[in-house]
Image 1 (cartoon, helix red, strand yellow):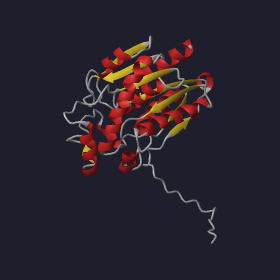
Image 2 (cartoon, one colour; image 1 turned 60 degrees about the horizontal axis):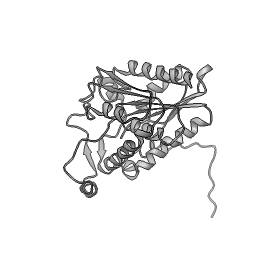
Image 3 (tube, rainbow, N blue to C red; image 1 turned 180 degrees about the vertical axis):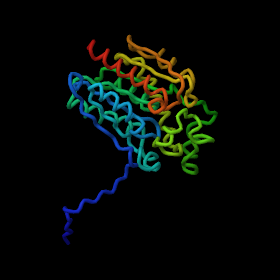
Image 4 (cartoon, rainbow, N blue to C red; image 1 turned 30 degrees about the vertical axis):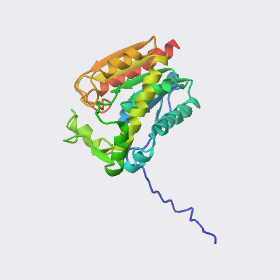
Length: 272
């Protein structure tokens, strides 16, 4: 039996959370052949990188804001995804930019920073900006298999006692898009991804800029220093900011962070 589809009637049934879609901004002028891949964090969405993407695009750079597998749809989609899926999402973005640019920079927030550093050891890119990037997860007395079992009976855990309490800019928090709970199974995958980053750090050779907020209570405090110490790159920098929390791309720290990232891309791309 044939089923006829009325092609004149357009039906849109989006699965992605409104305003959390991936984005692509073509570059302009002399910087158009320089690509910037901006990657969001754990349970987050491309929206948290959009202001950074717009800023970089205003400098003429071509910008791609990817959506990591399982993110910005439904929490159960994230539970089904694995760390390899998230890294493949980054590889997709790199390949998209490679089709239209000559140089590629990876800029990631939190888990996006972990992915960017891990990818820098596996793919031909020109530099990395890793923001609010954790070196590890808080220690736990329980072995990993306990969390595997727990994930079947308690698939999600709260992010904190008071939602948004770590944010300095409450207006920015209200427009922020992320899953309200942390999937336990995905936290296990995050730990496995962190192990991949640890192995990657000594063999990274491209320039790296690390940015961390002194007011970030979400990740272990010495994360930036520990990442810096292991980095194999001969050109590596650390930068501290203050007055904003973990999501520094949407907090009051964002102007300082955006300028530092754009300056880094400009300096490294011109020296290539």
